[in-house]
Image 1 (tube, rainbow, N blue to C red):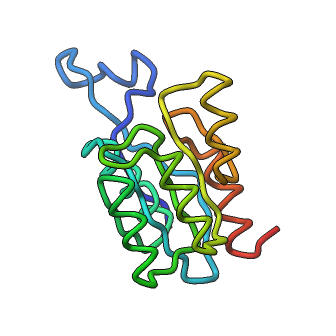
Image 2: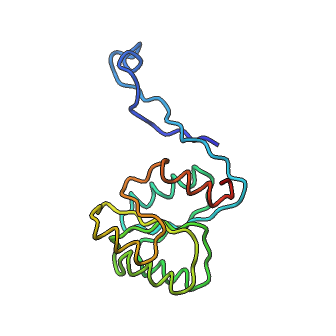
Image 3: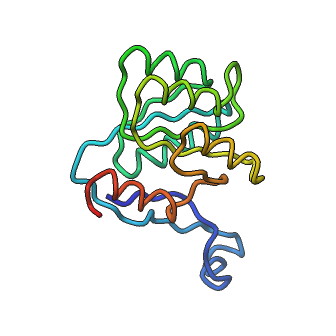
Length: 158
């Protein structure tokens, strides 16, 4: 199911025709992926906007999502028995950072796919996140070129 979101990606003639020179946005269509299975995801991000955006993107692809705003809440949720197919976790989190939260989640036996997302793209940060147990290190923004192959893998399509 493709979702439409605004995009500024259009030619000038198309943008200005018949509207008094004002820009009009045409719909942006997500790359299509049809999930065959029910997939769940946990989004862990301390920034409200990023958390809502990441959650919305996953929901647009058909995932059921839950979110928390800090690493400690993520660890507590997993400790309570919650299971997910995918966890998106930011590196810079309040209370308990993403690296330590990832270590603790993995130490509890959680073996789902984990994507470490961050605005910090240094090699040291990447190595720390990978050593903690994320499967994939992603510099924000999270795009379909990373997400779709992961979702296809989780859905058994590859």
